Image (cartoon, rainbow, N blue to C red; front, side, top):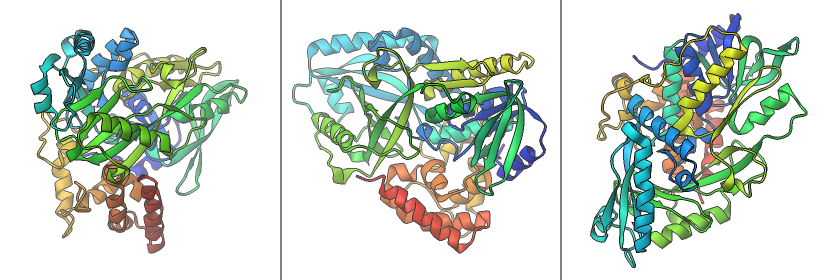
Length: 521
């Protein structure tokens, strides 16, 4: 079945009116997961996203499906156990966009071998039957073989273990397509502007199509606030007097060429100067280093890396890699903001728990926030349970624990450049064959071809050059300057597919190039 995310059909369903069982505000990981869960239970479901799907934090993760080694060290066994079980489910339900990833913890003191080894063995035990493979101790020689670019002075050995890796925005689109397969209506660039109430209870939302300016009044039995870092904006529509509920933190990642790691294994640096875990990861033919944990005052759709954060990652990478990266080696930097729920007495955002929080207001607004990509399915299950109670919907058991996501294939071929499309890959190839040159690269330094922009417009609801180069492909993250050079080609294809004029094309190129220039250091 080919992905069919159709904005025209979605707007028609919106204009037709009627009462929705659930309206979900926010098209990030949690909102999309909630839409899939609700639709799979048979509820009439509408999701509205004011920008693009996974525009914010959900496309800027560390690319790991994991239980959280750091949370294990903090003693949060409940969070780790649930996350590890969800990790196993996600890898089974979406092998086209996930994979098992090996990690090495290099140790420079003998007692680190025992300490971290014991912790990772406990990590395996908590995963139970959903584990990905057993951890084991490595000799110094084995670490050097697995990590040819790691510093060897003082190296005594290491620990090898497994976690999961994924492409976050590709998973977001896969979940959106899965929700559509089950009957959900999903719309990007439709912004919720207010909440409707009847006798003091939430009865729906008002929304505006950001492309046409058309306003809608939408009736709903239950409304879910899954707006992520902007969740307080929606809560204030319900109750303007509410205190801010989030403590925001940003994390940055630096993208380098593959040669800095030169390994299929990732590196886990278990403790940095500020107490964080640091990763050096192979991802889509690049090396990714992250992340930081910097408190910030306000949410932004386009957060910027701070100079101190860039220096922090470069300095720590230099401690562990034989080839110390410099600013000129950075191909791209991307920054995500964590929506952490405020906790009294927590000193700094690193002390704030990463678990999710579900709230239901007196008027019936269901708000879900916190958590992480790995546990999106569990968060969605609990959210739909709550929304069904609020909306007095007929109770239906959650069906998603073993639900294969759209495009599911039993095995991902790592040599296939279209593997992330899963079962939709033949449909993508058919589009590539339509026009001469559509099977040629967008840019020599990018692993994507021109016809993927047309496919994204037709089937993946891409509306802008940024949608294509940042999220339908990961061009912006892999090489910001190469993506900027590819922008005119993408804009021309999108313009033809969407019926846009030359002025729109020029504006899109300029807008994307400004964004790309902010993604380099």
